[in-house]
Image 1 (spheres, one colour):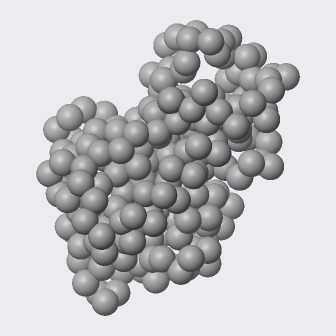
Image 2: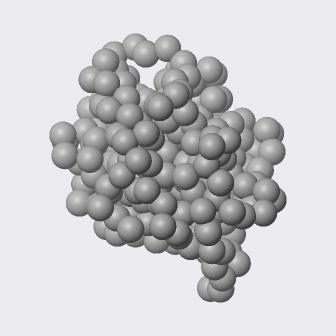
Length: 239
């Protein structure tokens, strides 16, 4: 069964900018019981809050077609490598996920992870993008502890920071406090872009927006417009 791995939004025009949203959904298929309170499916542990709305705005209003996850990261985390223990998380931000403890990891990979990434590879082969925008969001503070996060937006990268360097400066020029590989580093958590961008030399922006700014439609529309502007300016600087 692969019907819930991903969906697409927008119209592909080869040679432009596309977006990817690994953690856009909090959907849990009815045959999977995570063993958690239903309220946690609205929490950041289940999805990147606000990202689906931003991806839709980017695709429909700004010409950046999207490859969008259609299942919760608690079911299968698409921004983890297959061998990563957290690809089917047993614990997230201090919350135990009982239904994932002892889960059939291979079955989850076969049903969700591999179709998602095969679909993304096909999407990118068709789009032939000159820049990929990977959309994520981060909580203002982890409930399990740690300092408040002051950045409104952040750029993550591993070894290829060509696009990120431009975008950090451009977001700062828009008046935002910008994280540079914060609140966590793309050198540690960048699996999708490592696989589909860095491995093939395609420039990318792994953008993290703080969730309290995009928890409603107005904020999502605003940030989609800002991201589209910065992405297009970044592409022009790369060319």
